[in-house]
Length: 392
Image 1 (cartoon, rainbow, N blue to C red):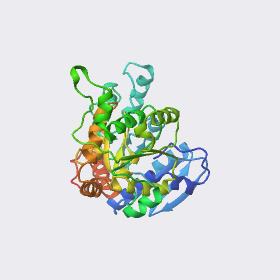
Image 2: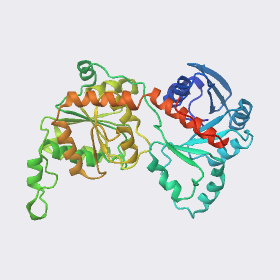
Image 3: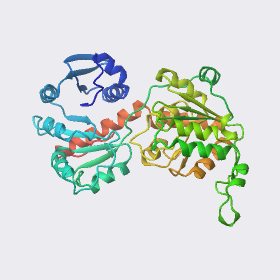
Image 4: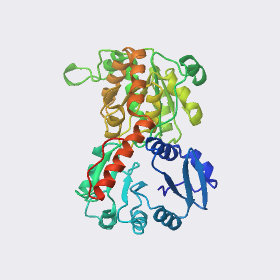
């Protein structure tokens, strides 16, 4: 069940094309459990029925969808997003008592203090939920503190989505994207405070020439902050972005540095169907986010073999498995510079292959679908008072 949608979209097929994570999840469940019928309900302006890849999609207003869910008599209902407690509570009411209700987090953020009037209402509405899904279990902690998730409600970790993006041949990718450098570092995201592009640019400058940078800024006692055992003097940084909140600040920072002016390329927006070339051309994918619910761009970069140098936050720890690339503390340019230097001066070819192997082993739609089905079965059995199920 998906409530949210872009109200500018008028065609159901266009919506399915836009929301690849919705169709990807539905298809992954259908493939993981061929004996199970999957029905995906999408709130929309108008009513429609669409079948794609063996999955039936029903488009309608909320009340029509709630009635459709009840008529379907499902074993489990999966709701996308923690931000719709009233609609989820209303949808629960006509369902059979044996039907389990699972709600998946989609970058819902911190719910705030337990004592707020808003959370008092939400707490009552969310009692009807059997289980919650998060990319990382740590992301549920604020919801426990706010007493919105009760001890009797289970919490499970599963990736929010995967991707069907595929790596391109290296030479073709570099030709199509214009990405160069040794190593080639790629940054993709919104130019805002949470994504913190300025810290990444500062770190990249240090990684280009740590000795020059540290000669100008020294720590108390003569030590050099951000000093690294490795540097990457031939590196380039390509930045792909859409929202431009900090664009002026990033441009000013780049232009103020002789080291950065010829090494940082500000590309702007790139159509999604061209992004495989950028991810495949890059050696390193760097991210400075302070908070994320998941990490779609990171997932796509890993699928194409770009080595992650990303912030040490729950979602990114879950995606990388702390097994590939490097993690660094959000806001710490020196830590990012050290990570860029260490990864960039290593065996890039071998590391890229390990990254792609990690994706195939842990992050594909097939893997996610199997884990989700196992969770569904356990939640249903728990609701019905039976033992949990073994993996399918």
